Length: 80
Image (tube, rainbow, N blue to C red):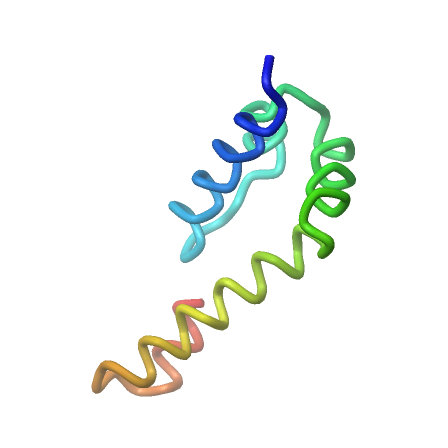
């Protein structure tokens, strides 16, 4: 089993569900490890915590929408 491939699959799950609720148990299942192990491994491989990665990705998507749409900021804030 290739752990980097499983990490890639977990990141794809995160990206697909950024606007919704992310399930840590599902992430761990995708990576074939426990939720705690996944969180530690993600931090080790990426250099940032899993929560920080998710927060940054959501902020990036929100900034993109603010810049490229006419949607109100408050609506975008509640979306992300």
